[in-house]
Figure 1 (spheres, helix red, strand yellow):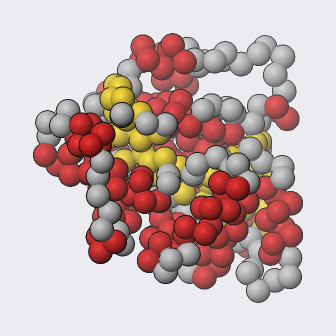
Figure 2 (figure 1 turned 60 degrees about the vertical axis):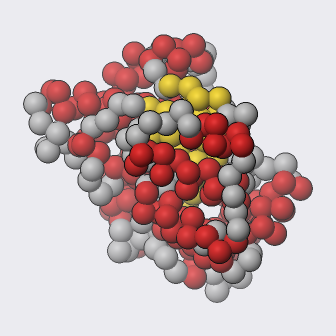
Length: 318
């Protein structure tokens, strides 16, 4: 049976884990970001900024070599690794070496829908623990499902005891994932219907229905973006009723993904990381909107600066 739980300041305070006063960078979490491209460099910067503000000891951005100097000038405290072509003999070796040094991996934000991203996604599905899949990589995930390639990759993960991947679809991406299943005869269980019966809003129930089908077929943990935002993980459905239309801007999702990846890298459970990231992301937007008396002028790049206030309110200031 699904358990329906609201994400609140109080629920997060109960799960808060203080960082030791003597913690050092090597044990404070290491996150690897396969985000950004020539077409979408901003997605890399947004996800990187959010990951660094989550509290990780190391944040490494894997991106086109030509972009690194400009990015390093913006964030000199981050690490950078040049993206390797799938045609290179170094492709598998480089990714394997990177994965051995990092606690969580994010792929997708502005990465591009192309053969290189597809090969990176396949490799990560078979090898990366604490994997977060978002944006462009979600479209490629649907392609893998349509081509019958996803099940074997997920089976490999299970044999290797790798953690269940987390995806963060908005409704358009969720429909893309769901449409692949439409002709496969997938159906909900009695437990699913029991959960849906508790959702009064029709639009929210429609989003959650699609998410439950995707969760079942793809064997994934899901952050279902929208109002409310739902987190499906470990037979629990956490929901956040906070809303702020300042987040209705391109790039907001990149910030959420980077924040979630950073929390997972620090050892948060999937449920705690998902719930905390969703709450902090939205509350940061609300705080900034109140400060400037407008949701229109809050930009995604402003959000990480407000994380500190929200972390403090839920007992994660240190």
